[in-house]
Structures are given as structure tokens and as C-alpha cells.
Length: 273
Image (tube, rainbow, N blue to C red):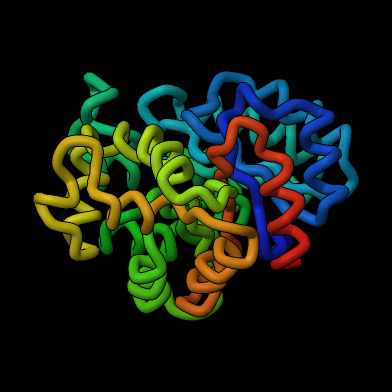
């Protein structure tokens, strides 16, 4: 693909990313920022982030297919890519059944949406698909640059690579908490992980990865939280991130859960870049 994401990216809620944040991330060596939590509309702030940087890629993680029509998003893509070629990756996905009243037959809806992007001229190489289950992972390889799995483990990364084969993008997200007080770090991780235990698509995927009812009940077991939100010193976290690369990831986008994310971003850049 023409878009160069680099080895490491940052996943962050789009409301927490401004021009100064983007410039600092690029300075540290991160290749991309994934704007999370269903950014949509005209994405006007993406232009500001790209204008403040020289090489950084901005990716949506993800545009929700129930929120914006493909023709509208295609016009947004054309505007951004026209000004900043090879620096904008359009990530799309079906979101969650619990959050979307229109949600039905997500596979068919995704196919229709990708057809709409095709018709509007959005290149396959400049888009990615949020993918957990094997059918959607396969679809991501057939119809986009590749897959952007969220809330997964290196085991999922390994299985996704087997489905995608070589040459397709595999860019999982990984939550981390920098801190050597295990109880405190785990509490920070659990505070985020517990939200996803109320979303059926994530729960189903975690079951496939071997987590049990005991792991998934309440706010999640220690085993579950530790797998989904790596914690420890920078070296320990870096070992966990490397496990994704060893399993076949091309690019890992890191979501730091500490209140101040910069110590972790700096430490992990030093360890991994």
C-alpha cells in the first residue's frame, strides 16, 4: 500500500487529539494516529492534524457505517487525500449492536457500504475495515487494504494473519498502562475494559479466544484485564506489543490508559522504535 503507517501508531479518542498532540507524536517517531470513537461528519479537524505534521498518517478508527453515507464520506476522503496524498487512511466499521438502532446484518451492510465507496472512487488501498470475526477479516482483505482489530490479543492477530495471508495490512489496537504497581495499573485497565463486556461482538470474540464465563462476568477477571490492557514498566509492555508483531501484525496502534499518556508514549517509542 502507498500509505506508510510505520511500525507503531497511537489510538486515541478523536476529541483528545489536536495539532500539538499530532506534532509531538510524529516527533517521537509514531507513524499514525488512529482517531477512535466513531469520528464522522466532515472530519475537518483531520486537515488541521495533517497540516501540523510532515509525514504522520491520520486514520479513522472507525467511521461508523450507520452514521455517515458512503457518498458523503467519499467526498470527505477526496478533500483530505487531495490535499495530503498517502496520509489519510479511511477506517470503516459496523460499530455495535447495542449502540445502533439501525444495526442489522452487519456483514451485508459492510459489503453495501464498500460498494458505495467503490462507486464513489475511494481506492481500496486507502481504506481499512474494523474486523474481529473471520468473515469480516476475510472481507477486509478482499475489499480494503486490510484489518484493524480492536480489543484483541496476539492469538487473534495470529489467526487474522492466517486468514489475510501476506501482503495485507494487519493493524491491531493494544491498550497499555504504564506503572509498576500491579493493583493500581490493573484497576486503570479494568475501568476501560469493563465497558466492552457489555457489547456482544467483543464478548463473542473474547470467548473464541478462550476466555470463560468467569473471565467475562462482572468487570472482568484479572486474567482478562491483564491480557487486554498490558501493564508494567516500558520493557514489560514492549514485550507484549512485540508479541503482536511476532504473530503477524504489520502495525500496532497503542492506546495508553494513563491519565497523562506521554510518559508511556515516550518510553514505548524508545523501546520499540
